[in-house]
Image 1: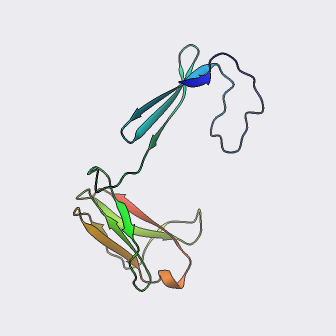
Image 2: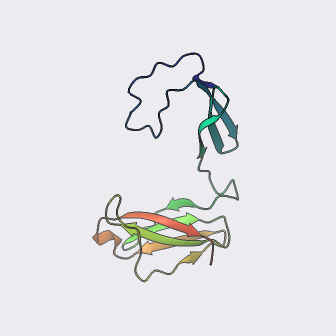
Image 3: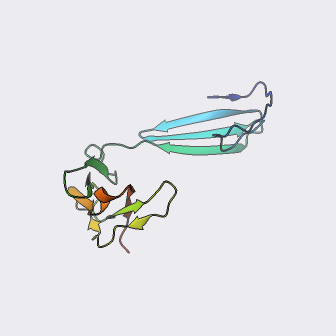
Length: 142
C-alpha cells in the first residue's frame, strides 16, 4: 500500500498525463492476480475515491484464454499480419486508419476470419502503396 495517509500538500494537481488528481488523505491498495493488477485509492473514511485495472498481454500459446497474438508480418504484396487466435469462434477483421485519431475502416473486399485456434493471416493489398495504421478488430459472431 502507498498513498497520502499522513499528509496532503496540494500543488497544481493539473499534470497533463494525470486522468484524475485528488488532494485527499488516503491509501493506494494494489491487488495483483495472474495478469491483472487492480488499484484502488481509498479515502480516509474509507471510501473508494478512484480505481483502475491493468491487464498484461500474454502469449496465447501459454494461456488459452488470450484472444490473439501477432506472430509476424509475412512478405507479400501489400501489408499482411499473421496472428495466432487461441479463442475459437471469435471473428477477426483487419482495419486501417489513414492517420492517428482517424476513422477506423475495414479493408475493402476483405473477408473476416473466424478463429479456429491456429495461425491466420489478414491482408491489405493496397497497404504497400499508402501510409496506414492497422488494428485487428475482435468480436463474437452475431
